[in-house]
Length: 381
Ligand SMILES: *Cc1c(COP(=O)(O)O)cnc(C)c1O
Image (cartoon, rainbow, N blue to C red; front, side):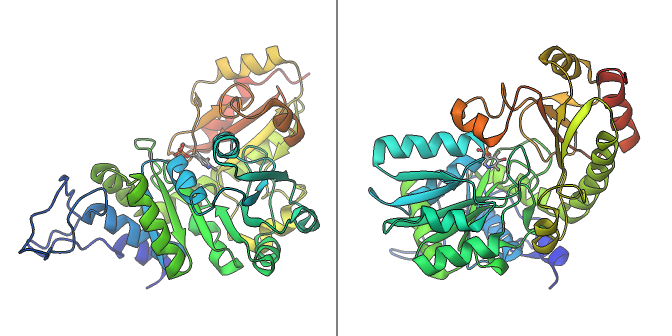
């Protein structure tokens, strides 16, 4: 089956009793045994549940992995994955990663002695330089949040593999529709399914996918041991969302490109961060390893914090809100919102300033989005 067919069909047929076309929501904590020591494959929902299993099989198929777990949030996916490591292990992390990723990494460093280095891996040579004998993991987030820097997954995964370290890719921004990390040599993929995979801003969720069976089994063990599994109803929503992932990603991108091109010509915008623009510093890498550029656009307002505040208050179609990847467009001020929990020095080093704006471009008529920005941006003088 091809990708879009898998998105709709893989894993979904869980109802042998009544042949429901859609996967039922198995809203149960526990399952009756057939006999002592014999079940129909499920005993307790923390360990496994047929609705969640459908989603896990679906995501594993879309990413091309041996197995997946669906968990409560994207952070649960990241936390579960970090439990692959032990005290003293060293993990190298994308320097401009998601704020919550930075927060949990620092917490694990303080409490469990997971050693961290934040490295700008835009030049893969910087990863090589940062390797230590105890380096066991390389955490790759590409495109990065919010500045959409692109990392060369193939080059980084190869360096990690040669060193005996796992490469982990946060594939939240592009989804398997536009980026296939396993084909590029990565070992583990994490998702916040809250974003594009679900796509309708009505659930929080996460997923961890492993390329190899052994790692997949360890992840499933950790998911059960830590109690991270996603609730059946939430898993069902994500499964439903994925059925339209392919056409949604296509329209997100069409709209995002139009917005990026509009902003690039605006005199009160100094920089547009969109890897689909030929002017983006990592456009060539993005073009080589991605099959699309996604729906996120960030930019710098040429002006003061007052101009920024006027924009944030002035938009009417865009909602001032955190998160991303839904059908509706959102505007975010990373410094005070999504990235407020990030270490200020790291934030500054990443290049996030008080005039950085991040847009999650939704599926509205793009002309309405452009007119909304036009009336809220500082005047053209
Ligand atoms: C949102 C996000 C997360 C965290 O996911 P939650 O579902 O909010 O817990 C992790 N990584 C990236 C890139 C994200 O955008």
